[in-house]
Length: 265
Ligand SMILES: NC(=O)c1ccc[n+]([C@@H]2O[C@H](COP(=O)([O-])OP(=O)(O)OC[C@H]3O[C@@H](n4cnc5c(N)ncnc54)[C@H](OP(=O)(O)O)[C@@H]3O)[C@@H](O)[C@H]2O)c1
Image 1 (cartoon, helix red, strand yellow):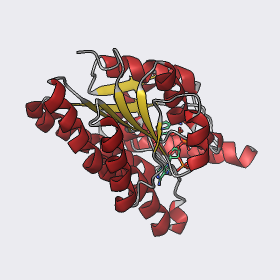
Image 2 (cartoon, protein in one colour; image 1 turned 180 degrees about the horizontal axis):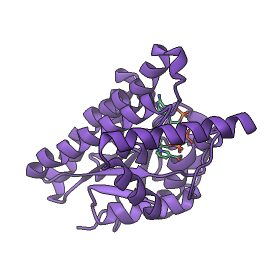
Image 3 (cartoon, protein in one colour; image 1 turned 45 degrees about the horizontal axis):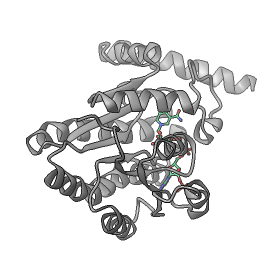
Image 4 (tube, helix red, strand yellow; image 1 turned 60 degrees about the horizontal axis):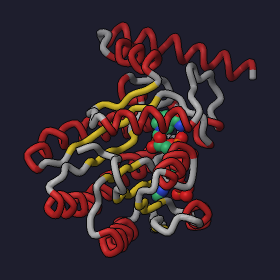
């Protein structure tokens, strides 16, 4: 059964901005029933206007009660989910000279623990759809190409995404017995408000619509690892598979180049 043929019931987090906003526009335009989540209600309501099948369910993914309430409302409206598409996330870079535990915990709280709260709340809805229709629901989440390779200043971000990718890859093995598929999405750089803050070069950066094309193609194939742009992600995967000593030398070179870029900025 294809993932997005016909009208699907989808819970999309991170729908107020960037990649999630572009995904929301596309999925709504395709006629799906989309539950839209993010903390800010106003952009979600603007997005939903004109789409009677859209459901606005704001929630803070760091708050278990808020996520559980969103899932309860979605289940009441949709009676199950064919696709849980978790995109919400954050990025903050560490300056290791000033080890900032609060920053590290914030990033892990959103990108790892937040994702786990969404999965915890959404999985029963995927099971409900499977039981009712004998189809294979899909659980997908946006990680990052940063999960493939340790990069300077990305201690918190990279660790949060690597942990998420590892978790989901294990989950795919176990959920196979339950006829639920899992996809992990690993974007390279995409133009969004999140990357607009970056003060370093972002090779092969894509616009958000091209990212949506790549994500939906990968989900349609039910790929475990949806990654793009391929010229960038294959290189990062290759570098990530180098022996640790070589990865360290590479990381030191990138760190030096970033420092020079910032000094020149
Ligand atoms: N852009 C890239 O180059 C890139 C590359 C690799 C991976 N990614 C990943 O792609 C995802 C989307 O990133 P983006 O670039 O589109 O960023 P973005 O424009 O900043 O969007 C982030 C989204 O996450 C939501 N969000 C953040 N914290 C939340 C929380 N505590 N509870 C609920 N929602 C929350 C935001 O909504 P509210 O502020 O309204 O809550 C917003 O909708 C993230 O997981 C990011 O790590 C991005």
